[in-house]
Image (tube, rainbow, N blue to C red; front, side, top):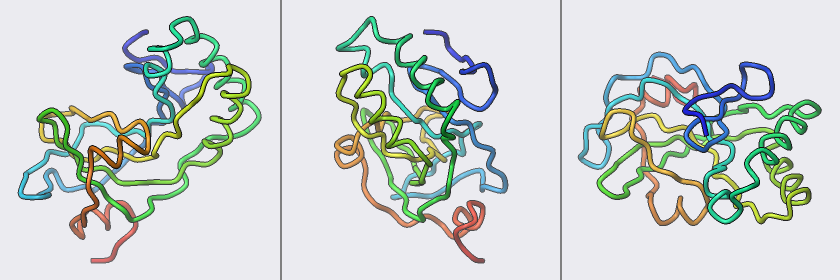
Length: 172
């Protein structure tokens, strides 16, 4: 696996650190956020993880290229895109790492997972779509790759108004 690589002959999707991701541009976020008595730092870049390929490879080590090819074939016909933030936030903690994530909606991701399962015969956990906004350690996230991960590693929190405004889901 390469450290960072654009997928499907374009610049919309990346394959980095074992994840297929959708990069996002965010502006006007405060540099820090006080969440659960922790001061977290804004990440230097943002994305939505669409699929944790490295988790699949743990049990199916020879399936990487098949997964990537299936993804590119799928997005050639059906767009996978960021839709909106849901207005829900989670504070995640795991092995000393702490993050604030914003839950979001992504079009056609569930459909892609179904197609991948049918073609590869591999059970795929639905990826809880979210954007990691802030981290305790600079740019160190926490894998929230399944609904179980989201439930076990995070709690629901309120985000500061300035963050909601920057995401277009709140008013000052």
